[in-house]
Amino acid sequence: MPHHPITQPVSIRLRSTWWVWLLTVSVFISIVGCQPKQYLVIVPNTTTPVNGSVTTPPTATVSLPAVYVGSYDGSLYALDTTRGTPLWAFRADTSIHSSPVVAYGRVYIGSLGGKLYALDAMSGSPIWSRTLGAGIYSSPTIVDGRLFIGCQDGRLYAFDATTGNLLWRYDTSMGIRIQVYGLYSSPAVANGRVFIGGQDNRVHALDATTGLLRWRYQTEGFILSSPGISGSQVYIGSSDSKLYAFSAETGAVTWQYQTAGVVDSSPVAAAGVVYVGSGDKTLYALDATTGQVRWTYATGGVIYGSPVVAAGTVYIASRDHSLYALDATTGQRQWTFQTQFDCYASPAVTGETVYVGSNDTRLYAIDRRTGQMRWSFKTGGVVVSSPVVAQKSQLIGTYPTISGGK
Image 1: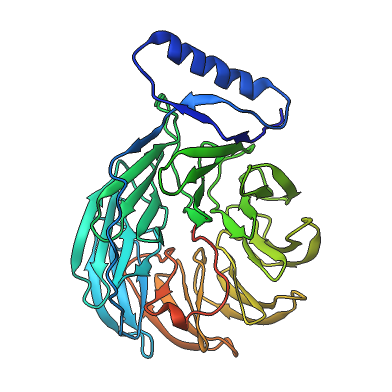
Image 2 (image 1 turned 90 degrees about the vertical axis):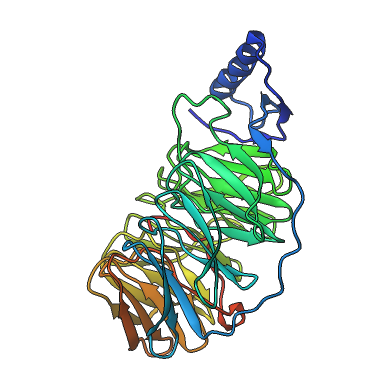
């Protein structure tokens, strides 16, 4: 049965009146079975506004030469970029799967215990924390003083990044919480909208300021991939083995490409090409406009991590324990770096160094040009969190919205 986008829904607040619920459920059921390509549909107002005002963020900067990474040992580490020695470590309530984000002189991270933390990026001292309704696999996205993050309670949250005040939350279960499907995916924000994939098989597009639903699209499998945005297009993978390209405005499908494995990797679009990994052990380079294959590269393992494109090179990690550097135009291999176990994380790339975590419990710093190791740091647990450096100005390249099987 085909699935189609639901565009520009009209929101209503549910009262206790039984017939409103009946109407809503009836309309929803009719959508699933119908054939037209788009629908205007009445749905419950599943966004709960709390406080619409946003505090002006601080202008603090980070002077530490640091790279930050989380570990399943429950710690977020700040490591010296030259030697890999720890500058500080913050102990969370439990394991860290989420990837950190640095903004406003702070580093933000989520935990599997459902805690969202804002820490001083220089010292690791906690500034504020919030407890969400379930574990957090999603990584924060921060735009214009707002922090967006998904949660395994099936809700997308928007917080004031400065104060930690809740701005709004969106419930993917449409208020009917018979069965909750989590948000493993990380949100992406562009042109006033926030996009996220769900384990309910849907892509959700919301107004970034109000949290109101603009459109949603149902794929044929659950979504761990996070959206990649380029211009007017949104790209996202699904466990139905497809990569989808949508109109960011309407949710209409521009094209879709079928791989031979789940697409949990998050896509990256650069110079007219979309790069994405697949469970079929292959990295795909597809034309961003048409979805036609430019080239493919077969690794020795499933690809759950997401690619980074920097200075004409694509960096991608694989479950064959390796990080690959490939020519972005041809797919020709430049070098391979071998770790001691599976790699799920996405790398961070600077002018000189590539940083990547591994399930062998280490974060590696690798020479960007030669593929030789500069240093490694051993944590107490697997590292599926993707690293980030303190100064964004040091990063080069185009990055995914962090997510996927990492």
